[in-house]
Image (cartoon, rainbow, N blue to C red; front, top):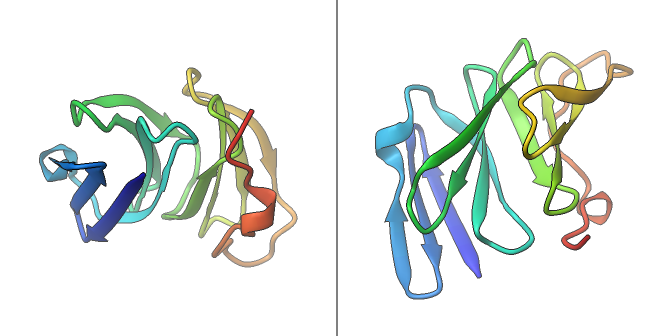
Length: 125
C-alpha cells in the first residue's frame, strides 16, 4: 500500500514501513498524484504542465512527460503500462509509461478537466 501527501513542491510517499522523501526532485508545485497498480511507481502531475513517474523505492525520477499546455489537475493509471491525465488546457491525454509522447488526446472539454472518475481508472492489467 502506498499513501501520499503533497504540499506544494514537497511529497512524502509511504510504502509499507518505509518512507520516501521525494521533495528534492521538484521545481514546480505537485498538483496531483497516483500510485501504479503494483505500488512501485508514483505518477505526479505538476503546475508547470509536466508529468513525471518516480520509483518509490529509490525516489528516482524515471521519465518526464510533456504535452499539456496548462497545469495538470488529475492523473491516474489505467493499467501498469498506461495512464491518463487531465489539465486546465481542457484535454485528457493517454500515455504509455515507457513513452514520453502522448498516445491520444481528447479535446471535447470547454473548461479545464478537474477530476477522473474512479470507476474509469482500473488498477489491474
